[in-house]
Length: 428
Image 1 (cartoon, rainbow, N blue to C red):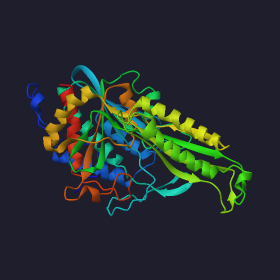
Image 2 (image 1 turned 90 degrees about the horizontal axis):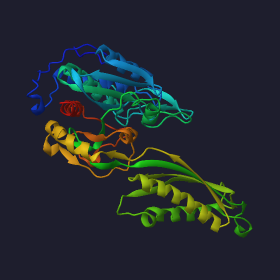
Image 3 (image 1 turned 90 degrees about the vertical axis):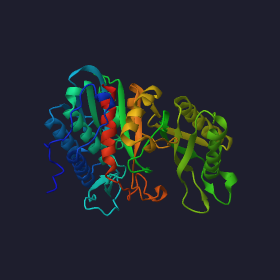
Image 4 (image 1 turned 45 degrees about the horizontal axis):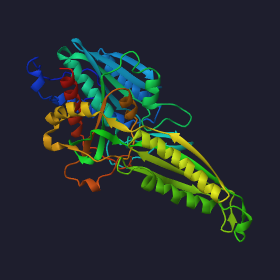
């Protein structure tokens, strides 16, 4: 009979490694643990929760970790869970992070465990789905915790397990995510020597792993602009100040920031507008126009420079037309940077698990991740785990955040093995 996704005790058939063999041993995952990880994933997928509202998810995680006898802390950054596993002998502490939150997306994948959950988001009733794959991250890290707990007599050091809420961003008016966990003292008493994380992706086939030393994922900052003009009749534009024409000029002028005003040989950057709103009739020039957009970059100094140039450009162009520009920038996630020394040290461990041909360097990713906050505090390594079925062309697979995002579950055991191998090799 298929075990319940909430079952806690089970026997792991793991062969004990001798201390002398530990360095050259490749981690394997028992069939029982592989199935348990899948069961966990299906449970979390069926019952997703939005950012800062991961109450049942958090409870299930903490119950499992407490059953292992780990030191467990809860309610960090609202719903976060942190557990500590202590090895047999003293040594360094390393950390692993998994994010827990889902997205306001109505699932369109035909699965027996598809989400039918709903929630309120920005005042509307929405479907809720693990469309970014965080259910897999939680299941994988629970598997790593169980596997390492069976092997703790062979570890010299400690492992911190971080189950983090609100990676997708806290609700309006709330704090959350990695930044809040750190603000509340996550690394204050025990600061890990290194922190590791992974993210499932449709851009690699099942079991493949993608990494990049140095900058991997972009910083993310959003902005709002209001161009203030002077209302007038559309037939007499000289009697007012046209904020629509001014907004168009601002949009075009700001495109020269990335192409002409910052060093394109240093790192790529993007300034994109996502919406423009103003006016209501064809023959009325309105008082104001509002615009929203995003900034992406891969260098922290360039990031700050672009934001300054965005404000200066908008204000100067508006002034030249007799209008004014009000710019508000919401500072988002920093650049996700993989420590080069740590990356070089641990990639051989990942290759032992996945195979040399399945581990590859990937291009820069303009998406953003709040794992970046941890990597600002201590050396970090973040990599991607492919979950697109091997017989499906990558360009035909649904991307993360899509209502059709699909995960090939055999890939999960590769994630468990990779993170476990990293822990064993680092703490050897």
